[in-house]
Length: 342
Ligand code: SAM
Ligand code: SF4
View (cartoon, helix red, strand yellow):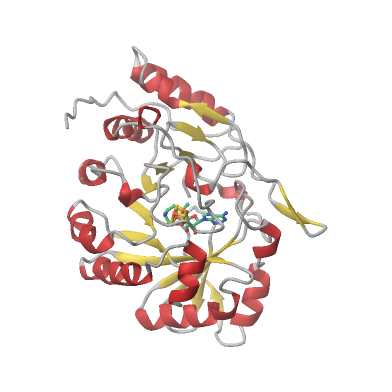
């Protein structure tokens, strides 16, 4: 594919009305996925028609505009980023930007199903660490939660990534009636495998088959249980993201907690999300967005993109409104996580 973009001189770094510098982009490369996690998607999803989805070249142009405005880390996500055709081309191009010093890191969040064939190429393209989502080690539970019988592919994928020299962190959504009985075992497995783990509270994003409240498991309750088995001490580790980290005893491993419901984390937000159709959402939990695709496909993509970015960042809200009130999850948004890019 042609690569004809020329960098413009350094432009003003992106800073939102609350003084937060935007240095991190999460770019959703597809809304499609080979799993159907119950808390993320409905079984029957209507996926976007191809012309609406940005081409990989457009995604690269967009990424470079962000880099010119101070973005230093890009995470590819989805949907499942590794089911996007030719995705390695984009990873490779962004890896080259890391090599040129225009970016600190290119990384991915993946469900792991495609890692066996792709891990080596990802490593060669410059990916040094990835997050793999895994909610259970139990094959039946995995099939129930993801509606697909693919746990062996995921476990083999994690091994393949590590063999290729990629550091893996596990992301697990805490699910009442789903994996609540085995989070301690999952943590023990991560520790024994030498993997860090981040636990995530389920968020009210899009309609799914089950009521959100039925699956909601506050991490305060999970931690009360985990503390009976491990000693946790706050870790100085920071990613500028929503997770708070704890050292797990003297194992050398870390536990991260993402607690949108029990502990708001928006004050230090450094990120924005772009969907595969080129919409920038300035907050995962709000509906405000700006269309970057129109700018990208205009007669003056570079100029129009930068104006659109100024408009977007100037409207970045203070934070999300997710909360539990009277047993109800409030602050819902209509989009699924797979649309916004998790
Ligand atoms: N398919 C990839 C994966 O599963 O890692 C990347 C996209 S997925 C949408 C990114 C992350 O969002 C996953 O860790 C997933 O568990 C999480 N997620 C999806 N829906 C969620 C929800 N409603 N609440 C909290 N986390 C959610
Ligand atoms: Fe697919 Fe990831 Fe959503 Fe699961 S969480 S359905 S793997 S996009």
